[in-house]
Length: 367
Image 1 (cartoon, rainbow, N blue to C red):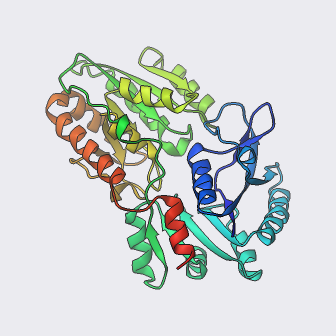
Image 2: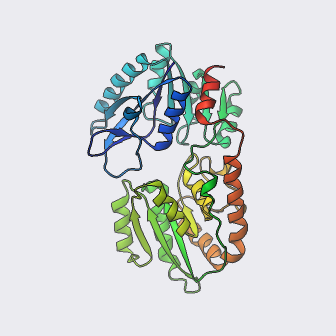
Image 3: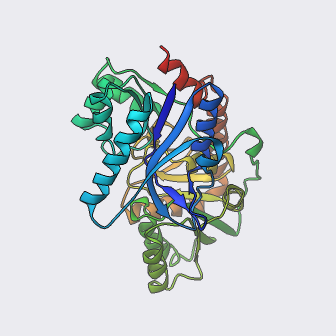
């Protein structure tokens, strides 16, 4: 059988012009190949020299279908439709990462009598009427968090949906045990795509307020990642004269660098407006960080305020200030149990009996 994977992220092309994807998605392709499937990838493509996408499907006997984003949306979607139809007709089964701006391509899969599956890994628009229409006609759905699996199943018990094992780069060997104690200096960390909806501007504004509280221990925030809000973040830091308190690290070139950033930090902060479940929270917990996060999207399915994290409200500077003040003032009493519970959370998921992503797909395709 030939499986076409339609990702909801872009290919990234470096100077050599070869489209690349995230390594975990490449691993999924290789696992499906090991199970006897022929695999192809379709997605939009960007010419980008600074991205974490390092896996080239074309170098692993996987076919690539790509379109480029233009300034004219109608032309962009017309090209994507033509390429998508050509790809769908060539393959036996379509597997779409969802939500996806190309979700309408699944209608063509239905028209052409092609079976399809859906992998829900984001939270925006996944409970619309059109989404449920697509779910009801899918062979199966995999969801990255049990939180939304239960919600979708409750809405329509006929939908064939299961929770998948998260696609994580980490394993048991990445467990980083650290001594939790009161310190005179704390390293704060933000790691995410630099997009305004991840909440970096609210975090910066909160730091401006926190530095005026002279009763707090010293701290410094590192902001790591690349993305469309990079220049805006840089300007905000400069306008507020926060260069001594915040470092805009920018893009980290590989996962080892990302993991080292977590290990150097004490507190990980994610003020995201919406999400399915960010891998960064797993990475932060296994690195021994205290996680401070909003409870949006699928995050409440794993994170519990006072157990393995501290909750902040989305788009709320005051909430960040209040929570970080409490944590910095009481780190030695609050952090030990939060960090230990974070370890337990990640290890429990890593050791779960849920099949790997490719094997779970194989079981559901053939059921």
